[in-house]
Length: 380
Image (cartoon, rainbow, N blue to C red; front, side, top):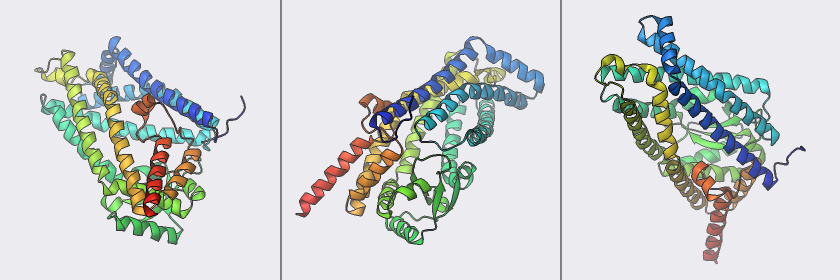
């Protein structure tokens, strides 16, 4: 099959279709694996094996059990991730070599491993201490962790996978910093985000909280967009800050997480675990059931979460147009990014409903052009 040109609309449609299929495959395979572990009662075998290794040490046995589950799920998902790696290369988006991809996968798994082990230990400790209200305490800790991650991610997590350096363009730095401060978004620096060694895609963001808030611009964005277009992209991000979308998103996510923890509690009771018996309460053979219940709750809420996110994105777009007094640079930047990132401009309503946290590119462009036309008309 001949190479696919990235500017081809059909290529964009096929690429995004592959990405969606791989995402669904990853979810389905993970769910099937956990369902099999429960249905075949492998979970009891894994638990018993973990206790044979750890003796009577519950926390150590839980560590061994969780390790087995993490390795199994990673083995299943690795094939899907490699498929995505091939698709990115097939459509000329990825520049990353296999060795670099494997190193990223290893770092990603190590991070997931450490965080998952800590969370699982905390959850079962809470179950031991407060068997009837552990899920409320777990939800509160989840919310604290969400805020903590938003705060430390720019300085601790992102540098594990990407390289950042202070932007050399002093004029652009001053321009973007001034624009952020005018909108009340005080930033601690403007950084160039090195993406060109792994992808041709471009991105920009206003990340972090408080002293970690900073502007990051991918080198791929800097190479293709003019300063006016970069300013338009950042104006959109500042729109999120101005409307307090991060705080609102955390609250919205908190409500979704509360529903998820409640579903986990109901699932375990439905499975008739004896909650009056202290040993049964901390039987971690129920962990796959917990994960399945949380996953089901998350999937059920995806359309709602996506709709809320799209609403915020549309508001941020309008803020950018009003802030700059024109949508022209926003339109040209979005057109460049759509081609560069191989974005699907006109997906179906069902696809948007299920998969899109942003409005489709075509919809955003039409809204921007309509706003610009109305403004030009009023100016006459």
